[in-house]
Image 1: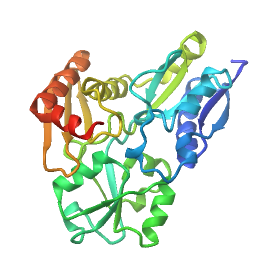
Image 2 (image 1 turned 90 degrees about the horizontal axis):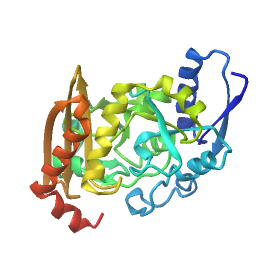
Image 3 (image 1 turned 45 degrees about the vertical axis):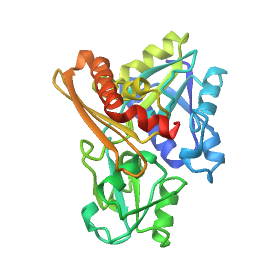
Image 4 (image 1 turned 90 degrees about the vertical axis):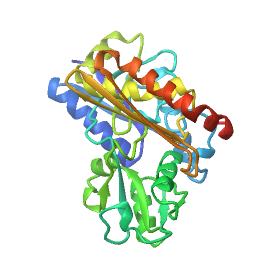
Length: 308
């Protein structure tokens, strides 16, 4: 392992923490491996004002990182898998999916609460996700989802400053930043369904770099990979964007996969949820089945009405 590998990543605290997780996993297998981090600023890092569902382009948080990889400035790249567009960029491959310990969402509240029911009437909830907004409104129509941007620590600061009664975040990011003590409660991902591939880290390499791709593949978690790809396949089958009010969560036990998915209007009134079970080897077939069920149950009309 004489060569020094360069890993491209966004420059925020969470992105660096996630990259260090990947580096640590690699060094457990290759103790002498040398890896340097290349920080990349993405459009999503530059634009902190636009609400996420107002962004039409794909790869808002990933394109510039992928550019660095494709141009040879880096040998691999680390992404939050949920941020990657469902269409793989030509010349790149996902060599490993790893560290999916927490797929679920969590809530951090200004006051002590242990469930969504305990939030005060008309509580102001900070979130930048249509998926979360639809589920919140379905659970409690009185809650006031309010757009919030910024990294995890920025959002927590805005909560502490009194701008919100609570904020909704992916548990994985909060845990990786060592802020788990801030969490009021976590949602059951079978009931409050996360974004496809949420919590998983995707490690990209160039398709023609066989040596690096094979090296990175040694940290691939097959169960996490199967689940994450199945969830993303729900999105691709529905042909909707990553900001659509759609969620998918795959649970693998032994040889069986069970997928929970939903699609909803933004008010949470026309909330369509389905479950499908099959063998893990047929994960994509199960994903297509549940997507088609959502589509035929009213999902098509929802997507057409929102033009997402």
